[in-house]
Length: 298
Length: 279
Image (cartoon, rainbow over all chains, first blue to last red; front, side):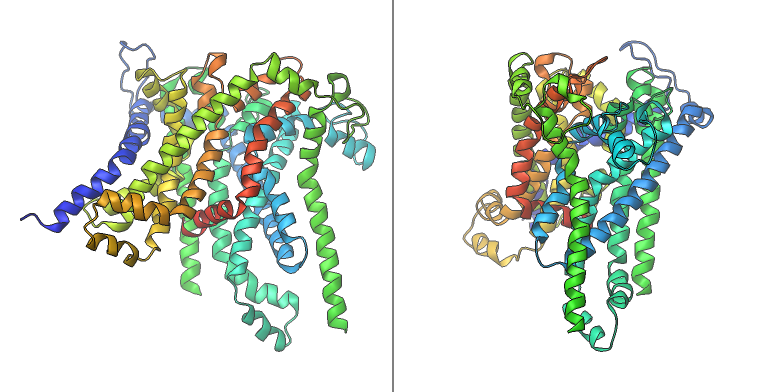
Protein backbone atom coordinates (compact mmCIF):
# COMPACT_ATOMS: atom_id res chain seq x y z
CA UNK A 1 0.00 0.00 0.00
CA UNK A 2 1.31 3.39 -0.93
CA UNK A 3 1.24 5.87 1.88
CA UNK A 4 -1.12 8.79 1.91
CA UNK A 5 1.82 11.20 1.77
CA UNK A 6 3.14 9.75 -1.47
CA UNK A 7 -0.25 10.08 -3.07
CA UNK A 8 -0.63 13.59 -1.66
CA UNK A 9 2.71 14.58 -3.13
CA UNK A 10 1.67 13.42 -6.59
CA UNK A 11 -1.68 15.23 -6.33
CA UNK A 12 -0.02 18.42 -5.08
CA UNK A 13 2.51 18.43 -7.92
CA UNK A 14 -0.22 17.89 -10.50
CA UNK A 15 -1.93 21.03 -9.17
CA UNK A 16 1.33 22.94 -9.15
CA UNK A 17 2.59 21.78 -12.52
CA UNK A 18 1.06 24.39 -14.89
CA UNK A 19 2.18 27.40 -12.81
CA UNK A 20 5.54 25.84 -12.07
CA UNK A 21 6.18 25.09 -15.72
CA UNK A 22 5.44 28.71 -16.59
CA UNK A 23 7.74 30.02 -13.90
CA UNK A 24 10.55 27.64 -14.76
CA UNK A 25 10.48 28.46 -18.47
CA UNK A 26 9.92 32.23 -18.26
CA UNK A 27 11.53 33.17 -14.93
CA UNK A 28 13.92 30.52 -13.55
CA UNK A 29 15.55 29.60 -16.84
CA UNK A 30 15.96 33.27 -17.89
CA UNK A 31 17.54 34.01 -14.53
CA UNK A 32 20.17 31.30 -15.03
CA UNK A 33 20.51 32.19 -18.67
CA UNK A 34 21.14 35.86 -17.81
CA UNK A 35 24.00 34.77 -15.53
CA UNK A 36 25.49 32.73 -18.36
CA UNK A 37 25.10 35.56 -20.87
CA UNK A 38 26.62 38.05 -18.45
CA UNK A 39 29.81 35.96 -18.31
CA UNK A 40 30.26 35.93 -22.07
CA UNK A 41 31.03 38.21 -24.94
CA UNK A 42 27.56 37.42 -26.29
CA UNK A 43 27.24 37.10 -30.01
CA UNK A 44 23.79 37.80 -31.46
CA UNK A 45 24.31 35.56 -34.50
CA UNK A 46 22.66 32.23 -33.69
CA UNK A 47 25.53 30.02 -34.86
CA UNK A 48 28.46 32.19 -33.83
CA UNK A 49 30.47 31.42 -30.70
CA UNK A 50 30.08 33.54 -27.57
CA UNK A 51 33.41 33.27 -25.77
CA UNK A 52 33.47 32.98 -21.98
CA UNK A 53 35.07 36.09 -20.53
CA UNK A 54 34.52 35.59 -16.79
CA UNK A 55 33.68 38.71 -14.86
CA UNK A 56 34.88 41.09 -17.57
CA UNK A 57 31.38 42.51 -18.14
CA UNK A 58 31.02 43.23 -14.44
CA UNK A 59 34.41 44.91 -14.36
CA UNK A 60 33.39 47.03 -17.34
CA UNK A 61 30.57 48.45 -15.22
CA UNK A 62 33.01 49.62 -12.58
CA UNK A 63 34.96 51.73 -15.02
CA UNK A 64 31.90 52.85 -16.99
CA UNK A 65 31.09 56.47 -16.15
CA UNK A 66 27.61 56.24 -17.58
CA UNK A 67 26.87 53.32 -15.25
CA UNK A 68 27.99 55.30 -12.20
CA UNK A 69 25.96 58.30 -13.29
CA UNK A 70 22.92 56.07 -13.84
CA UNK A 71 23.46 54.51 -10.42
CA UNK A 72 23.68 57.92 -8.79
CA UNK A 73 20.53 59.05 -10.62
CA UNK A 74 18.68 55.92 -9.52
CA UNK A 75 19.80 56.33 -5.90
CA UNK A 76 18.77 59.98 -5.78
CA UNK A 77 15.43 59.21 -7.42
CA UNK A 78 14.81 56.35 -4.98
CA UNK A 79 15.72 58.47 -1.96
CA UNK A 80 13.69 61.52 -2.99
CA UNK A 81 10.60 59.68 -4.17
CA UNK A 82 10.51 57.11 -1.34
CA UNK A 83 10.83 59.81 1.31
CA UNK A 84 8.30 62.02 -0.47
CA UNK A 85 5.76 59.25 -0.83
CA UNK A 86 6.21 58.06 2.77
CA UNK A 87 5.93 61.52 4.27
CA UNK A 88 3.00 62.75 2.19
CA UNK A 89 1.25 59.37 2.35
CA UNK A 90 1.54 59.37 6.13
CA UNK A 91 0.31 62.96 6.49
CA UNK A 92 -2.67 62.32 4.22
CA UNK A 93 -3.53 59.09 6.04
CA UNK A 94 -3.33 60.76 9.47
CA UNK A 95 -5.54 63.64 8.34
CA UNK A 96 -8.03 61.28 6.71
CA UNK A 97 -8.29 59.35 9.98
CA UNK A 98 -9.31 62.55 11.76
CA UNK A 99 -12.00 63.90 9.46
CA UNK A 100 -15.56 62.61 9.54
CA UNK A 101 -16.86 63.69 6.13
CA UNK A 102 -15.55 62.86 2.67
CA UNK A 103 -13.12 60.12 3.71
CA UNK A 104 -13.97 57.79 0.83
CA UNK A 105 -14.07 60.69 -1.63
CA UNK A 106 -10.57 61.88 -0.77
CA UNK A 107 -9.20 58.34 -0.59
CA UNK A 108 -10.47 57.58 -4.07
CA UNK A 109 -9.03 60.81 -5.50
CA UNK A 110 -5.59 60.28 -3.96
CA UNK A 111 -5.56 56.75 -5.31
CA UNK A 112 -6.33 57.66 -8.93
CA UNK A 113 -2.68 58.18 -10.00
CA UNK A 114 -1.75 54.76 -8.58
CA UNK A 115 -4.10 52.93 -10.94
CA UNK A 116 -3.29 55.05 -13.99
CA UNK A 117 -0.83 53.58 -16.47
CA UNK A 118 2.81 54.73 -16.30
CA UNK A 119 2.78 55.43 -20.02
CA UNK A 120 -0.14 57.83 -19.71
CA UNK A 121 1.13 59.69 -16.64
CA UNK A 122 4.66 59.96 -18.06
CA UNK A 123 3.36 61.59 -21.23
CA UNK A 124 1.08 63.75 -19.12
CA UNK A 125 3.99 65.04 -17.03
CA UNK A 126 6.08 65.59 -20.12
CA UNK A 127 3.27 67.81 -21.34
CA UNK A 128 2.81 69.61 -17.99
CA UNK A 129 6.54 70.32 -17.75
CA UNK A 130 6.96 71.44 -21.35
CA UNK A 131 9.30 74.35 -21.78
CA UNK A 132 7.03 76.93 -23.39
CA UNK A 133 5.30 79.57 -21.32
CA UNK A 134 2.02 77.77 -21.95
CA UNK A 135 3.26 74.65 -20.12
CA UNK A 136 1.07 74.33 -17.05
CA UNK A 137 3.95 74.18 -14.56
CA UNK A 138 5.73 77.14 -16.14
CA UNK A 139 2.48 79.07 -16.16
CA UNK A 140 2.02 78.41 -12.43
CA UNK A 141 5.57 79.39 -11.57
CA UNK A 142 5.92 82.42 -13.83
CA UNK A 143 2.49 83.99 -14.20
CA UNK A 144 0.63 82.90 -11.10
CA UNK A 145 3.20 82.56 -8.34
CA UNK A 146 5.92 84.80 -9.85
CA UNK A 147 8.57 82.46 -8.47
CA UNK A 148 10.69 82.55 -11.61
CA UNK A 149 10.97 85.30 -14.18
CA UNK A 150 10.98 83.28 -17.39
CA UNK A 151 9.76 79.82 -18.39
CA UNK A 152 12.10 76.98 -17.43
CA UNK A 153 13.03 74.51 -20.14
CA UNK A 154 12.64 71.58 -17.80
CA UNK A 155 13.48 68.62 -19.97
CA UNK A 156 16.66 69.76 -21.68
CA UNK A 157 18.86 69.81 -18.56
CA UNK A 158 19.41 66.77 -16.35
CA UNK A 159 18.76 68.37 -12.98
CA UNK A 160 15.54 70.09 -14.04
CA UNK A 161 14.39 66.98 -15.89
CA UNK A 162 14.75 65.10 -12.62
CA UNK A 163 12.49 67.63 -10.93
CA UNK A 164 9.79 66.55 -13.37
CA UNK A 165 10.57 62.82 -13.06
CA UNK A 166 10.82 62.91 -9.25
CA UNK A 167 7.61 64.92 -8.95
CA UNK A 168 5.90 62.33 -11.11
CA UNK A 169 7.27 59.50 -8.97
CA UNK A 170 5.93 61.08 -5.78
CA UNK A 171 2.61 62.18 -7.28
CA UNK A 172 1.93 58.67 -8.58
CA UNK A 173 2.77 56.87 -5.34
CA UNK A 174 1.37 58.95 -2.47
CA UNK A 175 -1.98 57.17 -2.72
CA UNK A 176 -0.36 53.75 -2.41
CA UNK A 177 1.49 54.69 0.79
CA UNK A 178 -1.69 56.34 2.09
CA UNK A 179 -3.80 53.19 1.59
CA UNK A 180 -1.36 50.98 3.46
CA UNK A 181 -0.98 53.49 6.29
CA UNK A 182 -4.76 53.83 6.59
CA UNK A 183 -5.02 50.05 6.99
CA UNK A 184 -2.33 50.10 9.67
CA UNK A 185 -3.96 53.01 11.52
CA UNK A 186 -7.26 51.17 11.65
CA UNK A 187 -5.66 48.30 13.58
CA UNK A 188 -4.83 50.59 16.52
CA UNK A 189 -7.45 50.02 19.24
CA UNK A 190 -9.53 53.10 20.06
CA UNK A 191 -9.25 52.37 23.82
CA UNK A 192 -5.55 53.12 23.71
CA UNK A 193 -6.29 56.69 22.72
CA UNK A 194 -9.16 57.03 25.18
CA UNK A 195 -7.07 55.92 28.14
CA UNK A 196 -4.20 58.20 27.19
CA UNK A 197 -6.56 61.15 26.68
CA UNK A 198 -8.05 60.67 30.12
CA UNK A 199 -4.54 60.79 31.52
CA UNK A 200 -4.26 64.25 29.96
CA UNK A 201 -2.24 63.46 26.84
CA UNK A 202 -2.49 66.06 24.05
CA UNK A 203 -3.24 64.98 20.49
CA UNK A 204 0.40 65.59 19.70
CA UNK A 205 1.37 63.19 22.51
CA UNK A 206 -1.06 60.60 21.13
CA UNK A 207 0.56 60.85 17.71
CA UNK A 208 4.08 60.72 19.06
CA UNK A 209 3.77 58.05 21.75
CA UNK A 210 1.00 55.82 20.41
CA UNK A 211 0.40 56.15 16.67
CA UNK A 212 3.90 56.52 15.30
CA UNK A 213 5.58 53.74 17.35
CA UNK A 214 2.81 51.29 16.38
CA UNK A 215 3.10 51.95 12.65
CA UNK A 216 6.92 51.91 12.44
CA UNK A 217 6.96 48.32 11.06
CA UNK A 218 4.45 49.35 8.40
CA UNK A 219 6.56 52.37 7.48
CA UNK A 220 9.58 50.13 6.99
CA UNK A 221 7.56 47.62 4.98
CA UNK A 222 6.15 50.31 2.73
CA UNK A 223 9.58 51.82 2.25
CA UNK A 224 10.90 48.43 1.11
CA UNK A 225 8.13 48.13 -1.46
CA UNK A 226 8.56 51.70 -2.65
CA UNK A 227 12.32 51.23 -2.87
CA UNK A 228 11.93 48.12 -5.01
CA UNK A 229 9.50 50.07 -7.17
CA UNK A 230 11.84 53.05 -7.47
CA UNK A 231 14.70 50.88 -8.71
CA UNK A 232 12.41 49.53 -11.42
CA UNK A 233 11.26 52.91 -12.70
CA UNK A 234 11.88 52.82 -16.42
CA UNK A 235 8.91 54.23 -18.33
CA UNK A 236 9.23 57.86 -17.08
CA UNK A 237 12.82 58.04 -18.31
CA UNK A 238 12.04 56.18 -21.53
CA UNK A 239 9.16 58.46 -22.44
CA UNK A 240 10.15 61.82 -20.93
CA UNK A 241 13.88 62.20 -21.61
CA UNK A 242 14.95 58.94 -23.33
CA UNK A 243 17.90 59.02 -20.93
CA UNK A 244 19.31 62.09 -22.64
CA UNK A 245 20.89 64.50 -23.04
CA UNK A 246 24.06 62.35 -23.40
CA UNK A 247 22.83 59.63 -20.99
CA UNK A 248 22.65 62.21 -18.24
CA UNK A 249 19.13 61.27 -17.11
CA UNK A 250 19.70 57.53 -17.39
CA UNK A 251 18.67 55.14 -14.59
CA UNK A 252 20.46 51.80 -14.23
CA UNK A 253 17.47 50.00 -15.68
CA UNK A 254 17.05 52.33 -18.68
CA UNK A 255 20.80 52.13 -19.35
CA UNK A 256 20.60 48.33 -19.14
CA UNK A 257 17.79 48.43 -21.69
CA UNK A 258 19.62 50.71 -24.11
CA UNK A 259 22.82 48.66 -23.83
CA UNK A 260 20.78 45.61 -24.79
CA UNK A 261 18.48 46.90 -27.48
CA UNK A 262 20.38 49.85 -28.96
CA UNK A 263 24.03 48.84 -28.54
CA UNK A 264 22.99 45.16 -28.86
CA UNK A 265 25.51 44.26 -26.15
CA UNK A 266 23.55 41.49 -24.43
CA UNK A 267 26.49 40.35 -22.28
CA UNK A 268 27.12 43.71 -20.65
CA UNK A 269 23.39 44.38 -20.32
CA UNK A 270 22.89 41.10 -18.45
CA UNK A 271 25.75 41.99 -16.11
CA UNK A 272 24.04 45.33 -15.40
CA UNK A 273 20.77 43.46 -14.77
CA UNK A 274 22.46 41.23 -12.21
CA UNK A 275 24.10 44.18 -10.49
CA UNK A 276 20.71 45.88 -10.27
CA UNK A 277 18.92 42.79 -8.94
CA UNK A 278 21.62 42.26 -6.31
CA UNK A 279 21.35 45.89 -5.24
CA UNK A 280 17.58 45.63 -4.88
CA UNK A 281 17.86 42.42 -2.85
CA UNK A 282 20.61 43.88 -0.69
CA UNK A 283 18.59 46.98 0.12
CA UNK A 284 15.38 45.12 0.87
CA UNK A 285 17.34 42.70 3.10
CA UNK A 286 18.74 45.59 5.15
CA UNK A 287 15.31 47.15 5.50
CA UNK A 288 13.77 43.80 6.54
CA UNK A 289 16.50 43.43 9.17
CA UNK A 290 15.47 46.80 10.50
CA UNK A 291 11.88 45.60 10.83
CA UNK A 292 12.97 42.55 12.74
CA UNK A 293 15.27 44.52 15.04
CA UNK A 294 12.41 46.87 15.68
CA UNK A 295 9.99 44.04 16.43
CA UNK A 296 12.40 42.55 18.96
CA UNK A 297 12.83 45.89 20.69
CA UNK A 298 9.15 46.41 21.38
CA UNK B 1 -16.79 73.71 25.04
CA UNK B 2 -13.19 74.58 24.20
CA UNK B 3 -12.41 70.96 23.38
CA UNK B 4 -15.27 70.67 20.96
CA UNK B 5 -14.42 73.94 19.23
CA UNK B 6 -10.84 72.79 18.89
CA UNK B 7 -11.95 69.54 17.31
CA UNK B 8 -14.18 71.29 14.79
CA UNK B 9 -11.39 73.71 13.92
CA UNK B 10 -9.04 70.80 13.37
CA UNK B 11 -11.54 69.08 11.09
CA UNK B 12 -11.89 72.25 9.03
CA UNK B 13 -8.13 72.75 8.71
CA UNK B 14 -7.51 69.11 7.78
CA UNK B 15 -10.30 69.14 5.23
CA UNK B 16 -8.88 72.30 3.65
CA UNK B 17 -5.38 70.80 3.51
CA UNK B 18 -6.76 67.60 2.00
CA UNK B 19 -8.55 69.71 -0.61
CA UNK B 20 -5.22 71.28 -1.57
CA UNK B 21 -3.66 67.83 -1.86
CA UNK B 22 -6.62 66.51 -3.83
CA UNK B 23 -6.37 69.45 -6.25
CA UNK B 24 -2.67 68.78 -6.83
CA UNK B 25 -3.58 65.15 -7.51
CA UNK B 26 -6.48 65.86 -9.81
CA UNK B 27 -5.44 68.95 -11.80
CA UNK B 28 -3.12 66.95 -14.10
CA UNK B 29 -6.08 64.68 -14.93
CA UNK B 30 -8.40 67.61 -15.53
CA UNK B 31 -5.84 69.19 -17.79
CA UNK B 32 -5.43 65.92 -19.66
CA UNK B 33 -9.18 65.64 -20.21
CA UNK B 34 -9.47 69.24 -21.36
CA UNK B 35 -6.51 68.86 -23.75
CA UNK B 36 -8.14 65.78 -25.25
CA UNK B 37 -11.10 67.99 -26.19
CA UNK B 38 -8.96 70.79 -27.65
CA UNK B 39 -8.04 71.30 -31.28
CA UNK B 40 -4.28 71.34 -31.94
CA UNK B 41 -4.21 75.17 -32.24
CA UNK B 42 -5.58 75.56 -28.73
CA UNK B 43 -3.20 73.13 -27.03
CA UNK B 44 -0.46 75.68 -26.45
CA UNK B 45 -2.65 78.74 -25.90
CA UNK B 46 -1.58 81.31 -23.30
CA UNK B 47 -2.88 81.34 -20.63
CA UNK B 48 -3.52 77.59 -20.52
CA UNK B 49 -7.19 76.79 -19.96
CA UNK B 50 -8.52 74.03 -17.74
CA UNK B 51 -11.83 74.20 -19.60
CA UNK B 52 -11.50 74.28 -23.39
CA UNK B 53 -12.97 77.32 -25.11
CA UNK B 54 -14.22 75.41 -28.14
CA UNK B 55 -14.44 71.74 -27.14
CA UNK B 56 -14.23 69.26 -30.01
CA UNK B 57 -14.44 65.49 -30.40
CA UNK B 58 -12.00 65.63 -33.32
CA UNK B 59 -9.15 63.91 -31.43
CA UNK B 60 -11.32 60.95 -30.51
CA UNK B 61 -12.56 60.67 -34.07
CA UNK B 62 -8.98 60.81 -35.41
CA UNK B 63 -7.85 58.16 -32.93
CA UNK B 64 -10.46 55.70 -34.15
CA UNK B 65 -10.63 56.59 -37.84
CA UNK B 66 -7.11 57.20 -39.07
CA UNK B 67 -5.09 55.50 -36.35
CA UNK B 68 -6.48 52.00 -36.11
CA UNK B 69 -7.29 52.60 -32.49
CA UNK B 70 -10.10 50.05 -32.44
CA UNK B 71 -7.55 47.39 -33.30
CA UNK B 72 -5.24 48.38 -30.44
CA UNK B 73 -8.17 48.36 -28.05
CA UNK B 74 -9.12 44.88 -29.26
CA UNK B 75 -5.53 43.64 -28.90
CA UNK B 76 -5.26 44.97 -25.35
CA UNK B 77 -8.59 43.44 -24.40
CA UNK B 78 -7.76 40.04 -25.87
CA UNK B 79 -4.28 39.88 -24.31
CA UNK B 80 -5.54 41.05 -20.93
CA UNK B 81 -8.56 38.73 -20.74
CA UNK B 82 -6.61 35.60 -21.68
CA UNK B 83 -3.74 36.52 -19.33
CA UNK B 84 -6.06 37.15 -16.40
CA UNK B 85 -7.94 33.88 -16.91
CA UNK B 86 -4.67 31.96 -17.23
CA UNK B 87 -3.26 33.58 -14.11
CA UNK B 88 -6.39 32.90 -12.06
CA UNK B 89 -6.52 29.24 -13.05
CA UNK B 90 -2.84 28.40 -12.63
CA UNK B 91 -2.31 30.54 -9.54
CA UNK B 92 -5.34 29.17 -7.72
CA UNK B 93 -4.30 25.59 -8.49
CA UNK B 94 -0.80 26.15 -7.16
CA UNK B 95 -2.07 28.12 -4.17
CA UNK B 96 -4.48 25.30 -3.29
CA UNK B 97 -1.68 22.74 -3.29
CA UNK B 98 0.61 25.00 -1.25
CA UNK B 99 -2.10 25.78 1.29
CA UNK B 100 -3.60 22.32 1.73
CA UNK B 101 -1.02 19.63 0.99
CA UNK B 102 2.11 18.56 2.80
CA UNK B 103 4.77 17.47 0.33
CA UNK B 104 8.46 17.53 -0.38
CA UNK B 105 9.61 20.87 -1.81
CA UNK B 106 6.62 22.86 -0.58
CA UNK B 107 8.67 25.44 1.34
CA UNK B 108 11.14 25.77 -1.50
CA UNK B 109 8.42 26.37 -4.09
CA UNK B 110 6.81 29.02 -1.93
CA UNK B 111 10.17 30.72 -1.43
CA UNK B 112 10.59 30.71 -5.21
CA UNK B 113 7.24 32.46 -5.64
CA UNK B 114 8.14 35.14 -3.09
CA UNK B 115 11.57 35.53 -4.66
CA UNK B 116 10.14 36.32 -8.09
CA UNK B 117 7.66 38.73 -6.54
CA UNK B 118 10.47 41.02 -5.45
CA UNK B 119 12.75 40.48 -8.42
CA UNK B 120 12.82 43.51 -10.76
CA UNK B 121 10.71 42.23 -13.67
CA UNK B 122 12.75 44.01 -16.34
CA UNK B 123 16.06 42.50 -15.29
CA UNK B 124 15.30 39.28 -17.18
CA UNK B 125 14.27 40.95 -20.40
CA UNK B 126 17.34 39.94 -22.44
CA UNK B 127 17.11 36.16 -21.91
CA UNK B 128 13.31 36.36 -22.15
CA UNK B 129 13.67 38.12 -25.47
CA UNK B 130 16.02 35.40 -26.75
CA UNK B 131 13.58 32.76 -25.50
CA UNK B 132 10.63 34.43 -27.21
CA UNK B 133 12.69 34.56 -30.36
CA UNK B 134 13.46 30.84 -30.10
CA UNK B 135 9.78 29.99 -29.67
CA UNK B 136 8.91 32.37 -32.53
CA UNK B 137 6.76 34.43 -30.18
CA UNK B 138 8.21 37.82 -31.05
CA UNK B 139 5.76 40.14 -32.76
CA UNK B 140 2.79 38.00 -31.73
CA UNK B 141 0.00 38.57 -29.23
CA UNK B 142 0.75 35.12 -27.77
CA UNK B 143 4.20 36.42 -26.83
CA UNK B 144 2.55 39.22 -24.88
CA UNK B 145 0.14 36.87 -23.10
CA UNK B 146 2.91 34.52 -22.03
CA UNK B 147 4.90 37.32 -20.42
CA UNK B 148 1.89 38.93 -18.76
CA UNK B 149 1.15 35.58 -17.15
CA UNK B 150 4.76 34.97 -16.08
CA UNK B 151 5.11 38.42 -14.53
CA UNK B 152 1.84 38.46 -12.61
CA UNK B 153 1.63 34.79 -11.59
CA UNK B 154 3.85 34.93 -8.47
CA UNK B 155 1.88 37.69 -6.77
CA UNK B 156 -1.44 35.94 -7.49
CA UNK B 157 -0.12 32.67 -6.01
CA UNK B 158 1.09 34.54 -2.95
CA UNK B 159 -2.23 36.32 -2.48
CA UNK B 160 -4.40 33.23 -2.97
CA UNK B 161 -2.26 31.00 -0.79
CA UNK B 162 -2.45 33.53 2.03
CA UNK B 163 -6.21 33.68 1.67
CA UNK B 164 -6.76 29.90 1.50
CA UNK B 165 -4.66 29.30 4.60
CA UNK B 166 -7.11 31.40 6.58
CA UNK B 167 -10.11 29.43 5.33
CA UNK B 168 -11.08 26.76 7.90
CA UNK B 169 -10.48 23.23 6.66
CA UNK B 170 -13.78 21.91 8.06
CA UNK B 171 -15.67 23.27 5.06
CA UNK B 172 -13.97 20.96 2.61
CA UNK B 173 -13.65 18.02 5.00
CA UNK B 174 -17.30 17.17 4.43
CA UNK B 175 -16.54 16.86 0.72
CA UNK B 176 -13.55 14.63 1.46
CA UNK B 177 -15.74 12.29 3.50
CA UNK B 178 -18.21 12.17 0.61
CA UNK B 179 -15.33 10.81 -1.47
CA UNK B 180 -14.90 13.81 -3.75
CA UNK B 181 -11.72 13.82 -5.84
CA UNK B 182 -9.07 16.51 -5.21
CA UNK B 183 -10.02 18.20 -8.48
CA UNK B 184 -13.73 18.22 -7.53
CA UNK B 185 -12.85 19.75 -4.16
CA UNK B 186 -10.72 22.40 -5.81
CA UNK B 187 -13.31 23.23 -8.45
CA UNK B 188 -16.55 23.00 -6.45
CA UNK B 189 -15.45 23.95 -2.95
CA UNK B 190 -12.19 25.91 -3.00
CA UNK B 191 -12.80 28.18 -5.98
CA UNK B 192 -16.20 29.44 -4.78
CA UNK B 193 -14.72 30.04 -1.32
CA UNK B 194 -11.79 31.93 -2.75
CA UNK B 195 -13.98 34.37 -4.70
CA UNK B 196 -12.87 37.53 -2.85
CA UNK B 197 -9.18 36.67 -3.28
CA UNK B 198 -9.80 35.72 -6.92
CA UNK B 199 -11.41 39.11 -7.48
CA UNK B 200 -8.43 40.87 -5.95
CA UNK B 201 -5.94 38.83 -7.98
CA UNK B 202 -7.95 39.45 -11.13
CA UNK B 203 -7.94 43.21 -10.69
CA UNK B 204 -4.23 43.38 -9.99
CA UNK B 205 -3.41 41.06 -12.89
CA UNK B 206 -5.76 43.05 -15.14
CA UNK B 207 -3.94 46.25 -14.32
CA UNK B 208 -0.54 44.65 -14.87
CA UNK B 209 -1.50 43.24 -18.27
CA UNK B 210 -3.53 46.22 -19.49
CA UNK B 211 -0.73 48.70 -18.71
CA UNK B 212 2.22 46.52 -19.73
CA UNK B 213 4.48 48.54 -21.97
CA UNK B 214 8.13 47.51 -21.81
CA UNK B 215 7.82 43.95 -23.10
CA UNK B 216 5.16 44.86 -25.67
CA UNK B 217 7.24 47.71 -27.06
CA UNK B 218 10.28 45.41 -27.19
CA UNK B 219 8.82 42.45 -29.05
CA UNK B 220 6.13 43.93 -31.30
CA UNK B 221 6.96 45.49 -34.65
CA UNK B 222 3.86 45.27 -36.79
CA UNK B 223 1.41 48.10 -36.08
CA UNK B 224 -1.53 45.67 -36.04
CA UNK B 225 0.06 43.88 -33.05
CA UNK B 226 0.26 47.00 -30.90
CA UNK B 227 -1.49 47.24 -27.56
CA UNK B 228 -2.88 50.51 -26.19
CA UNK B 229 0.19 51.61 -24.18
CA UNK B 230 2.50 50.98 -27.14
CA UNK B 231 0.16 52.80 -29.51
CA UNK B 232 -0.17 55.79 -27.19
CA UNK B 233 3.60 56.05 -26.82
CA UNK B 234 3.99 56.06 -30.61
CA UNK B 235 1.45 58.88 -30.91
CA UNK B 236 4.14 60.97 -29.34
CA UNK B 237 5.73 62.24 -32.53
CA UNK B 238 9.42 62.67 -33.22
CA UNK B 239 9.19 66.39 -33.96
CA UNK B 240 5.75 67.63 -33.04
CA UNK B 241 3.33 65.82 -30.85
CA UNK B 242 -0.40 66.07 -31.32
CA UNK B 243 -1.08 66.21 -27.58
CA UNK B 244 -4.83 66.31 -28.04
CA UNK B 245 -4.65 62.99 -29.84
CA UNK B 246 -2.26 61.51 -27.26
CA UNK B 247 -4.62 62.36 -24.41
CA UNK B 248 -7.78 61.35 -26.23
CA UNK B 249 -6.12 57.95 -26.73
CA UNK B 250 -4.93 57.93 -23.11
CA UNK B 251 -8.43 58.59 -21.85
CA UNK B 252 -9.84 55.73 -23.87
CA UNK B 253 -7.17 53.48 -22.37
CA UNK B 254 -7.57 54.51 -18.73
CA UNK B 255 -11.35 54.77 -18.53
CA UNK B 256 -11.92 50.96 -18.29
CA UNK B 257 -9.31 50.79 -15.54
CA UNK B 258 -10.85 53.66 -13.60
CA UNK B 259 -14.34 52.17 -13.86
CA UNK B 260 -13.00 48.83 -12.67
CA UNK B 261 -11.11 50.45 -9.82
CA UNK B 262 -13.94 52.65 -8.60
CA UNK B 263 -16.51 49.86 -8.69
CA UNK B 264 -14.26 47.19 -7.15
CA UNK B 265 -12.24 49.44 -4.86
CA UNK B 266 -12.79 47.23 -1.83
CA UNK B 267 -11.09 44.18 -3.40
CA UNK B 268 -8.32 46.24 -4.85
CA UNK B 269 -7.39 47.88 -1.59
CA UNK B 270 -7.46 44.49 0.15
CA UNK B 271 -4.93 43.11 -2.31
CA UNK B 272 -2.58 46.02 -1.89
CA UNK B 273 -2.76 45.80 1.88
CA UNK B 274 -2.31 42.00 1.92
CA UNK B 275 0.79 42.38 -0.24
CA UNK B 276 2.26 44.96 2.10
CA UNK B 277 1.41 43.31 5.39
CA UNK B 278 2.44 39.77 4.56
CA UNK B 279 5.18 40.45 2.03
